[in-house]
Image (cartoon, rainbow, N blue to C red; front, side, top):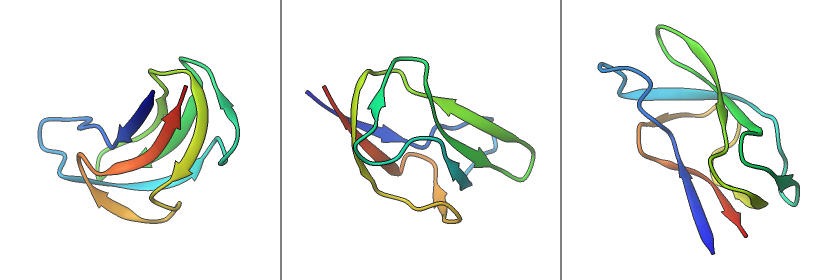
Length: 78
């Protein structure tokens, strides 16, 4: 199974966010609840947890990049 991780909307007015840190790297095992990355908005900074378990196959957006809500940031396979 392939899971595409998208940048979530963290608030009603959030339109984009900046990925500041990746806590996992390509090839790492990921458990449900593991921290994947940190995203910063104009109002907050938040660590995002995985809702799936598997292996991190791809990081689609590098740290430092500002992206719109809903953009695929990573791919996990189980």
